[in-house]
Amino acid sequence: MPEPDRVRASDLPPGAVRPAGPWAVANADGRLVAVSRRCRHQLADLAQGSVDAENCLVCPWHQSRYDLHTGEMVSGPRGFLGYHGPAPGYSGLVKLFGQVVRLRVRRALRRGDDVVVEE
Image 1 (tube, rainbow, N blue to C red):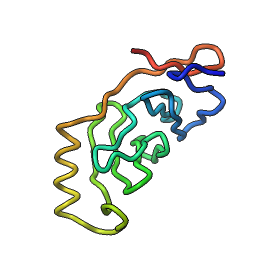
Image 2: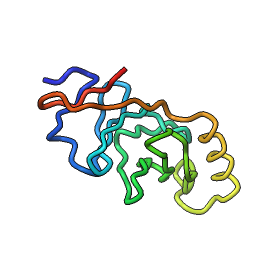
Image 3: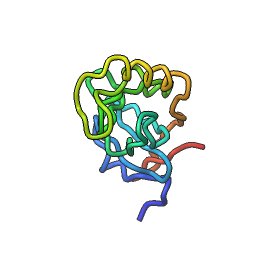
């Protein structure tokens, strides 16, 4: 069984995101990267998210999008709490916060059958 900061490589096809301890490990078209797991919006688990066509990590709750290179929020949430819809002023404020308080970013490396987060 993998250690907490590892994920099986076979569980991480392109576009997938998986948990590895405090990290969300993503496969963005073969580039492996790890980011801190909590969304800057409402602390959703980003390991439950996905990677979109632009290789951004998408939050599973309100679709905030994060640049996987920098950890910066590139688009704010589409809603809040149980509401899923337009909230332009609110979304802009959260996006500004997510640009300042970025996700932590680490390299993830393939080692044998596992992907390991480099500290």
